[in-house]
Length: 100
Image (cartoon, rainbow, N blue to C red; front, side, top):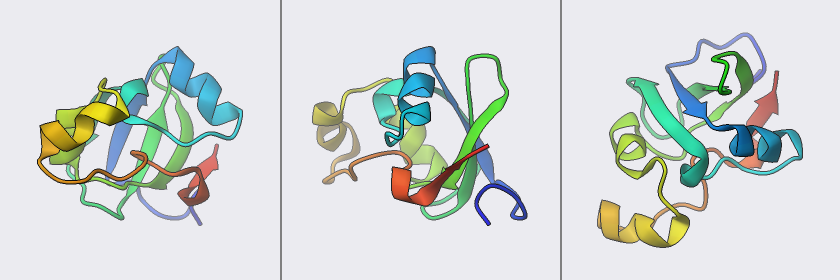
């Protein structure tokens, strides 16, 4: 279902390092994201697009678009300070993601 069928509510654009990490089975961390598009909430399906703009994966977002926009490009240890609450481990966890 994640790889197709459902309509993505937004897009998370990522850098080349994050693309390599996803292709090797890792979760998407905020540090690898460069841009957020669309309006989505936690649990919504998002498309994850590589540096060329083409989809690399689809997954369930651990953050709303508003919170994701605040934390993109930041390391995990800075997220609690930025958001004001204990952050989740990843923008999109590998267990809730499918490569396309």
